[in-house]
Length: 284
Image (tube, rainbow, N blue to C red; front, side):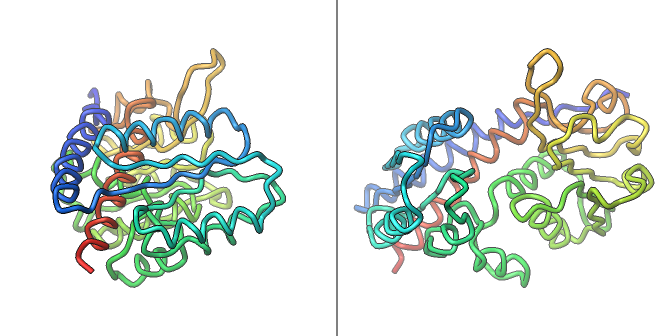
């Protein structure tokens, strides 16, 4: 068996086109959607991510603001900038790029973002809404993963899903979204003694721990859907995920590549959250 490749680039392109149409409609009514991105310091990966996010906004006809701050900015100064963006009616979404310098508490920064503009889906209000099944912003990466799984056409009701990882930004919200889709969900992590015992029973596996080859072919149920959230480098310096793609793709039914799988969808769902924030603001 050779797995079907789930093309994140193609799906993200489709979603961006849909967002562009919605943005044009809002702009025509005098409500141009706006996203503000704050970048602190000179982290190379963060600079690349931010560059793509700003370009995505502009490509969809959104207003984008990029604030660059030196790593020496104080926590108080950064919180003041977030508060100012909260009060700016031209801004509907606020994203503070992580990681932040060690002297700044990321939890404080996230808590300062208005829940109405929390397009990353990291605010405790967004997490709480997901927990109890209320409307709110979904964390972009798990949201994108769900859209990728949708493209397989597989009905999730009654399926067994395993999430490898328990982070607040991916693992936990991923598990909750799968639970909402009526999956039976198992969360595995560094304290799980035998990962393969769980993954071999799974119809869907989402790997999100940031470690190469955490999922190998002998750990996968034939025909399973495998979503690889990881972003690592192999010995040759090339991008790779958490999954042994070469091996697992010979067993799984569906699999996402790295790059070209989850990454583009994370950015696409940020746009979806931003347009939804702008539409809500325009309705009030």
